[in-house]
Each structure stands twice: as structure tokens, then as C-alpha cells.
Length: 247
Image (cartoon, rainbow, N blue to C red):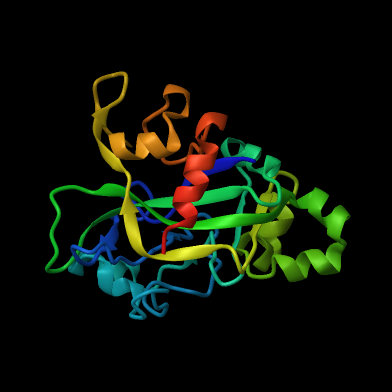
């Protein structure tokens, strides 16, 4: 079995802010990154409600940036309606190795919003897929047939938009979660603390408590945005039991 953690969602490097942590009980809203590359998606921050709080996502942006972002298209990936995720970059290529029953765990950066202020942004677990299938798009088409493939991944950003799919198909890795065994959490789970990288610069690293559950990823305890973190074999059972116990 394999377990991997992956960072997604808006942050200061992709969108200019972190997601909102709404109260001291870690209720939150997940905000996807903007569709800056293609600007093709019809969903915008101004017209799209959050999955959890059911209010327009633009309301979580700073007042001074709301006008600029209200009509900005959203890159909705992963999506939690049918539980799919896709990525065409080499850093995510190993996700094609995921098999049925494996766990793909999502985390994001969150900071206090409104009346609930926090000193800094931290990293929080907020959702997971129990994997149903994964692979390169081109291989999944051969395996499933084109019609079934389009049905399974119809809601995924990269498959939804024909021009994007045509451009990215050769390198695109897709993951499908089991809809009955995958979930988005009601409350986010903090798992980072403040640390430093090798250059002595501040960065979020896995907390001591969470390191007991997930291990130290072979010494890679920091969390740069684009690099998945694979749980080593000795901690897979602990990580799996813990994540599946979350509500």
C-alpha cells in the first residue's frame, strides 16, 4: 500500500493569499488556485460558492483585491464532486503508481479569517482520496476505452476542457478516488510547525506529533508547494488508520 501527501489550493505563490481558517475549531473553506495559464474555466471566484460555507469565494479575498479577482477563472483541481485529480508536470508523475486502495491526502495553507486571527499561515490536512485508479491519461484511455474514460473523468479540469486535454494528454497523470471512501473533512487538521530549510530560511515542516503518525519522509520534513511527500513503509499503517479516523 502507498500513502502520499500533496499540497493544493490557493496560497501566496498561486493566488496571492492563503485559504481562510474561520474559527478556533478549525472550520475552513477550501479555495482552488486561479486558472492563470489558460483562463478557460467558466467558474469564477465571484460567482462560485465554497463547498463548505456556501458563500461566494470572493468574499474570502482581501477587500482591496476583490474587484481584481471577482471575474478570474478558477483552476478547480482536485475536484470533490466525483473525486478526481490531474497534473501534467514531472514532479507529480509518480502519482501514476498509485493503485486501488492507496491514499492520496490533500493539504493546504490556511490562516485566520475575519474575527478569527492567527499570527501566521500553517499547513492543514483537509481531504483525501482512497484511490480507485490512477495512471497516465493515454494509458487510462486504452484501459477503459475513450467513452468510459470521459465518463469517469468528466468533471476533472484537464478532461473537461478539450483544448487543455489535447495539449496535456501525453504527460497528464489522473487519479480517481472512490466516491464512497474519499472525503473532504469538516474541520482542517493542522500538521505543521515553523522550521527552517537547509539555507536557514523559515519554512513549514511537519510537527512532532504528526511525524509520529506519518514519519519524516526520509528526512524531507519541509513542504515546498509542488513536491509530493510519500510516507515510508514503516508508517503507512499508522498514517492510514489516522487519516481514515478523521471526520
